[in-house]
Image: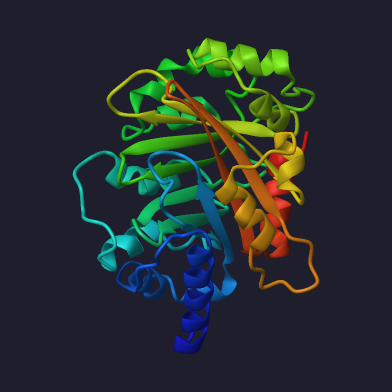
Length: 303
């Protein structure tokens, strides 16, 4: 269990990091999340994230990963009063996936403004899951099955590395590792985007995608289509993955990201997302990057 001093120290880091990016941290929002997961924080990997989307561009997000598979983080969120109970299928999805698929570890996201937002279910890297298994879960959006041909066409129908659900916006993310030998070169990226009706990719998206080991799609329960697609890659140099250009808040985190791992190289994950409304960028910086979490991401991305 994290003691009060450890929680206070972590809160101070979160508050100061958010302030550097012009985001005011709400203790009333953040502290309940930290106390809900305080038994798990000492063993977890911790990361911070910013993005340029209209949805969460004004927030500063935190992520705990490598949470033990024996503990459902959504159940903890409910018991801690972090999110209301719901009859929507998203409310049963984490438990339903755990009942149908092997879980390696869990993760949670929360914003210093918006509070608890997401959970993640990481599958063992040597037991990637097929779309058919997930599509057979009653609570999964029908859009997953509706896009089976798309996943098959691009060789990822049996390459699901993890899933995530956004409880506020009622969306479901499915993260795919591209198969060995499948490189996300411009022609492949253009084909992927064109198949799901997304705009032509920018040079920044194409540059990052070359280093990506996969992509994720966002689905909901109201539409059969893919709402957005996002490419991501782990790096030590975010600017190198975006052609040397970073949005101001992305650059600020890249330059000044705090680290609890003195002497270790900083690790980032760069993301670029495409939706019918356009593209946006995200940067995740590991504050405490346990070797296991870096290894796990490397295994997911290794081609």
